[in-house]
Length: 314
Image (cartoon, rainbow, N blue to C red; front, side):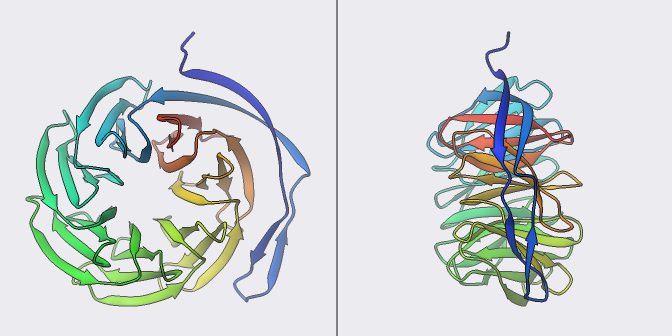
């Protein structure tokens, strides 16, 4: 029996969720009192304190904050394909179609996805969240409260744009870059072509992770215990939905939003149409960053030095 595999039956309470409807009125989404959830969870050892995770089309990569490394696992079976040194305290990891990019303490590292060869180190103060727009890698610089645009082909810094508010998480919607402003409880929308600020929109307290589902923008609000849903076209708030304590990482599987809850050590699945939590999975070990590989959700277990693989199906 593979020691990385475990079969766990858990009983979790489903609470009433207090939501803000787009009109500003309160809406209550009531679920069942209790529900039994049976999940097969596979766990694989990576480096120390993994913070984020990404999928390159075949493999899973984790940014191991305390090991100053990234780990590459084959997504099909979790086999470890390598661990590669990067800049200190890696925070975020993304894939640009050919290479892996890793942000960290004043450093952006570029690696060849095929074999982990380091292609370059680039100095960017306070490098945190990352996004790729098809041509450029965008870096949230928490130290200078800016966004740095880096040409992926050669690592050249194209430009730096002031956004303020301690930017952390980034997402690309096909035209614009969205940045969560951790200090201001807002998100900023920036035109990717030239860095023009399109708008800044209120969300919950402590916005961290952000994603685009093809139509709307979703933000995890750590200190509010909620998700914010904004219409990508104009930034209108479409809903604010309670999900639990300390929501961090986000992933979208094409049908549902998945959220890591650091304090309760759970991952929850949220229906995008109305923000209802429809599934809760206990994973333990402070789930942080999430990624979807086409069939499974992967969660970085920050305090367990592992990554968990969860079935995304019913």
